[in-house]
Amino acid sequence: MSAPPGQEAPERVFGFVLSDVARLMRKRFEQQARAEGLELTRAQWSVLARLARREGLRQTELAAILEVEPITLARQLDRLEAAGMVERRLDPSDRRARLLFLKPAAHPLLDQIRAVGLTIREEALAGLSPAERETFLALLVRVKGNLSDRLAADCAETVELAVHG
Image 1 (spheres, rainbow, N blue to C red):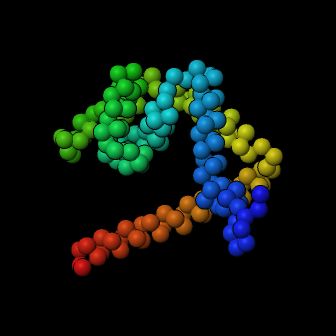
Image 2 (cartoon, rainbow, N blue to C red):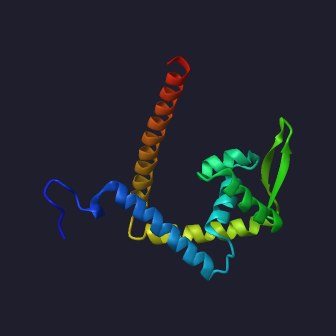
Image 3 (cartoon, rainbow, N blue to C red):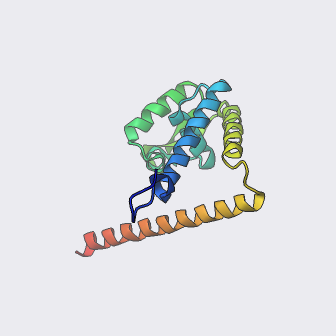
């Protein structure tokens, strides 16, 4: 089916394609994780994976990174803490805040998560040469940087307007 004159077909529009690729990768990850007996929800493995990159985050910081409400994250952390995967510690600089750390029991699961991720990444990039893979990733990183820079600039402008009218 062709698109109307002057419009691209959705399967050729950058945003649609990028969104579809991310959705399909998540679905394949979940499917493969279940097949390998990983008994975590997507939300739980997201929490563990983010914490593995930056232990010692405050709950509010992790909620912002994951783009979830703090109460939603608190429930996930309750389950992970009960399973012996995550530990909440008092923040020495703010006794109201909690810092998040992985417990040793989380590391074997993280190894499984990484292995599943590698499998899915290889599936997604099948047929691309090593040079094409590098170029593709470099371009995506550049696109991400463009959007991050614009978002930061817009946030700074908003703060400036709020402060100085």
